[in-house]
Structures are given as structure tokens and as C-alpha cells.
Image 1 (cartoon, rainbow, N blue to C red):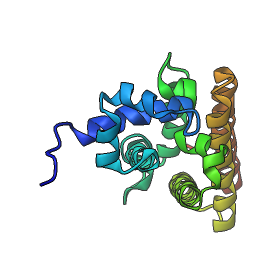
Image 2: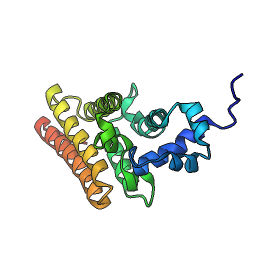
Image 3: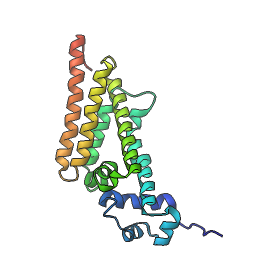
Image 4: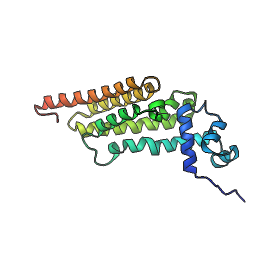
Length: 206
């Protein structure tokens, strides 16, 4: 007969997620995870099979509870014209907000991509899918703000925004003001494109 589970899996995953996010996969030891989750090593192995299994669960949780809620205004059927600028502004504010994990540790997936675990085929596939999801959201935001811009120009502008967002996530761990400035640059590039499109149409960019 199997053992009855006496803990909340989602809570344990969130606790582990915070440790992996702050320290990285390689620097996180099983005792760190035991302290964070309140679980014994045997309970962790029973529920998640391994440290790596818990990490994979933490990444899924990160995508579902951290990344996608912020991207939701850019991924629905009806994307508002100001959704991309709102996203960039909200992300900038989050990276400047005290001692939160985004402000101190950036992005769990960007960090993982630049660590040894990023060479793992499964992790690399998740990071690649995340980048595609981010690019799709940025493209939807650009399209909503600049619907008459040629498709190639829309893709280029969204790629610029994606690159600057990822740069901000990487920079915030060492210089949050510079990370915020990078997101300000993304907003400025978008505003410039809007102004240029408005001037080209002979009308207001608003």
C-alpha cells in the first residue's frame, strides 16, 4: 500500500521554486529544498522522483503562476492597443520593487538558460518554448498598437522588445536601475514607431 501524501504539492513546489529562482539549480542542494518545503528527502523523492523532478515542477509553476498571468493581456483574443506598453511598464515597476524575487533574481528561465542546466535538452526545449511564447505576445502587442505596420516591421519591432526584456531580466541581478532603463528603451522604441507611423499617415499617433 502506498503512503498517503500529507502535504500540499502546489505549496511545496512554490517553496522550491523560490529557492531555485534565487540560487539556481546547481547551487540548490537537497537540504535547501528540505528546509524550504518542510519535507524530508524521502518525501521529496516520493512526490517528485528527484531534485530535477522538483525543478521541472517548479518551472511549470513559474510559467503558469508568474509568466503567463503577466502576459495574459497580450495573449487573449482582444489585445488592447496599449497592452504592450502596459506590460513593459508593469515589468519595469516589478523589477524595481524592493526585495521581490523578480527584482533580486530576474527570470528563472533566463537564469537557467545561462547556467549549466541550460544545456540539458529538456530545459533547453522549455526555454525555447518560453522565448517563442514571449515573442508571440510581443508581436500581438505590436500588432494591436500598430495594425497598419507591415508584418515584417511588426516582427522586427517585437524582436527588439523581446531582446530588451530578456536583457532587463539578465541585468536586474546586478543593476536594477539599468534593467529599468532597458525597459524604458523598449517603451521608447515602441513610442517612436507609433509616432513615425502617425506622421507617415499624416494623422495623430494616439
